[in-house]
Amino acid sequence: SRVQAAAMFPRTMMGLGVLLGRRVPIVQWLPKYTTKDALCDVIAGITVGLTLMPQAIAYAGLAGLGPQYGLYSAWVGCLIYIVFGTTKQVSIGPTAMLSLLTFTYTHHLNADFAVLLCFMSGCVELLCGVLQLGFLVDFVSVPVISGFTSAAALTIASTQLKGLFGLKYNSEAFIDTWEAFLGHVSDTRLWDLVLGGVCIIVLLALRKLKDLRIGSPGDSGAHKFVHGWFWFVSTGRNALVVLLCSIAAFVLYQRDETPFSLTGKIVSGLPSLALPPLSTELNGQTLNFFEMVSELGSGILIVPLISLSSNVAIAKAFSKGSRVDATQEMVALGLCNILGSFARSIPVAGAFSRSAVNNASGVRTTLGGLYTGIMILLALSLLTPYFFFIPKCSLAAVIMVALIFMIDYQIVKPLWKSNKRDLLPLLSTFAACLLLGVEKGLLVGILVDILILLYFSARPTISVHLVESEPRYLVVQPRGSVVFPAVDFLQETVIARVNENKHTTNILVLDCAYVPIMDYTAVQGIAAMIEDVKVHGLQVVLLNAQEPVVKSLLATCPELRVANSYQHVAQILTEEPVKIELGIYLQNLKGTIHPQFKKVTRICT
Image 1 (spheres, rainbow, N blue to C red):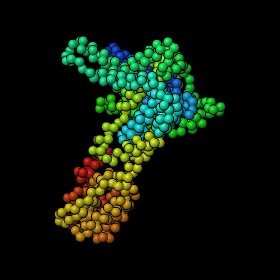
Image 2 (cartoon, rainbow, N blue to C red):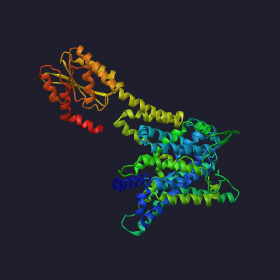
Image 3 (tube, rainbow, N blue to C red):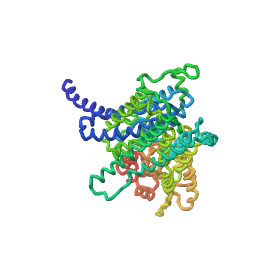
Image 4 (cartoon, helix red, strand yellow):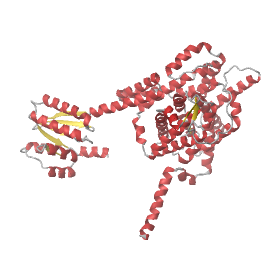
């Protein structure tokens, strides 16, 4: 026994090492980390930090919270993802989508609820990772995600009109926002609108700067230097625009002039690390943990669903064809949100824009997040007094320009060409998000997708054709799983075709080569259908059916003829009608399965 234990010990340790490498990916790449990797990560981390800083402040306002909450949310996730993340390009932090959802579920509450939403979202994400429930994300189709994203982008952009025009009003949904905007547009602050418009133009122009080519490419150092600066300015355009606007506002403020609406005072310093709020004061009442969770409602499920979908999608986009461990991404994102809530964070996830900047900056490992996190911590410690002078219209411009490119209008053309049916969940999700709100709109889209799946489950494709041989026979070939909702449809289709061809042939071949799954109810329905067909005077041959189906049907219809190939069908039809013994058929089935059936079996397994 000691010898066996000694022999098993290396295997056990190897298994633990593999598991540790999968669940704590840093142990795989850190021993191979080089100085060149470190230099690339420093450059990428600082570049992403310049992008994240103004975004974090803007997204906090979008969530209906103070600017400091955006910065609180921007550093913990960066550090946690270094250890547990699998995709080096992913940049964790606040996003426009999650900020909008946070506002949706907490705008009538206080900041404690936003922090608790972050904690609960992380718990759900971590639970999905531990239980390996990544397949649940697959139930949200690409058209639904596209419709949701486009509608959310329009909704968020509409909310930024208030800051762009220097207005003050409260609104929630898309229609309410436009009604409030049109009702207050006469109060527009001219200089806010002018500065905001200039910011939008400059941001769009700088976005194209990195693609500008001057002179012949060549290998000259000057050429590379110029284009390197073009790329750096284009990448850091958000920080540059906000910085210049803040300087202008500061100079005017020193002259006792405030033509712009300013961000105002921001709580300085690092947040105190503490447990997420398990109770809070609201309207003079003390709410406990369960009452707070009840107030958050469906947000506890909707927010993590969107977070996981976007994070896995971003990871796949930058994987370059390699496999993405969706389970580990769930674990990493869950830990980012759980631990982030200890630092007063709102829900976070990967952002495609920042991840693209990270990738373009040449990041080598997830350690680039360390330098991004350090920049945010330095900003919280040293720069918060200067954030007072950031014009709100400049932050609104940053958000609106980012959202322009989230409207996925390009998907309509390929859907129209390939599968017009997929336009239904796309358009229903888009319309419902605008009319009912993004959280209800997403549920509508998922419901439409499920109804479409149920419809095609109840209406499988059935191919029917007449084989012109001697003797002639009618072939009915269902394609796809035949389960209980499809039984009546299959029966009606077969009986209708039998009636159409009753003067042409008296033989029906039911080919199950493309039926990977058939449940008990479907088997019983087919048995009843066979009896109905016999009443019409037809002989039935079962072809390429799976072993359990054959057993069940022969138990109900012992006179049923069975075959495992079309050659076998021809042989049966030219012989005297005799009962095919189950044992002989099953033996033939195991040895000479029809090639089409083998193909289907491989696909299913």
